[in-house]
Amino acid sequence: MAGMFAYESSEVDWCEDNYKHSENVVEYFNTMSSFVFFVVSPIMLYLFHPYARERNLAVHLVWLLMIFVGLFSMYFHMTLSYVGQMLDEISILWVLAIGYALWFPRRHFPFFVKDRTTFSRMVLAITVVTTLSSFIRPTANAYALNCFALHILYSLGLEMRRYAPLTWAARTRRALRLAQASVGLWVLAISCWISDRFGCSVWQKLNFCYLHGIWHILIVVATAYGSTLVAYLDASYEIPHSLPSLQYWPRDDWALGLPYIALRGTAKTRKGC
Ligand SMILES: CCCCCCCC/C=C\CCCCCCCC(=O)N[C@@H](CO)[C@H](O)/C=C/CCCCCCCCCCCCC
Ligand SMILES: [Ca+2]
Ligand SMILES: [Zn+2]
Image (cartoon, rainbow, N blue to C red; front, side, top):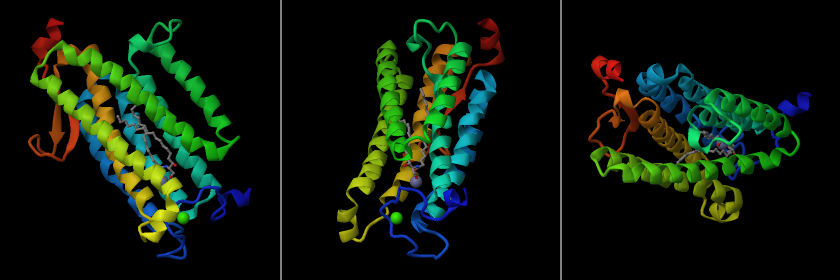
């Protein structure tokens, strides 16, 4: 039992040199870069609030859990322990599960599922089973999790194809721009993850072993962009009376910023629907 908490008891070891900067922290840069979760998550909780209040307060679970993902990611890279690895991966699985339960488009539900409550219960059951199965072959978990990203991209592609031809209004261009940015960030992030995993000898020769830490930063921003986009598409179909629009924080005209959904629906427009 104690062995599961032991330093380096995980079978996974990332490219960064172990104990290079501290004798208590196995992978220093990977540990420190997980701090980005604690910066982005509270901001996203704040930015998501108007949409969550209108749609479902459970939306907040996504970014609340992301704080735990950050915490477990720090613990994992600090110790490279088996428990750290499992906590890191299982918490990601539950963020994905909540995302699917909240935002997976109704029209793609299996034919035997009639409403979102039933769909959410099904997702919950699958997630419990998957959580238990994750102990069978822990080294396969990260690859399985990355497959979900591919499925999200596929579903997003279908949704954008359906949404974009509706109109070429400014709001459509904004949604398309956000989709491009989300996919671009994910491609950069996954390239870092794969390169760290499989190209370590090359990066060691170049004396640059920080790609996994860079992945942490990019994947958090990709999740902020991607989750805002799926939430925006959801809002456009499910609460159109609140007139959702995409904006950027801290300033809408800045090239770099975090996206959020502004609701312009007045009390009058809401009553009318
Ligand atoms: C219709 C559903 C919409 C759901 C949208 C929200 C989904 C957000 C889901 C997950 C958040 C990702 C958090 C990543 C944490 C990284 C921690 C980490 O680095 N762990 C590694 C070990 O240290 C581990 O090896 C990584 C495993 C792979 C994780 C794969 C996560 C999938 C990310 C999906 C991101 C979607 C972006 C969408 C862009 C269009
Ligand atoms: Ca290492
Ligand atoms: Zn990591």
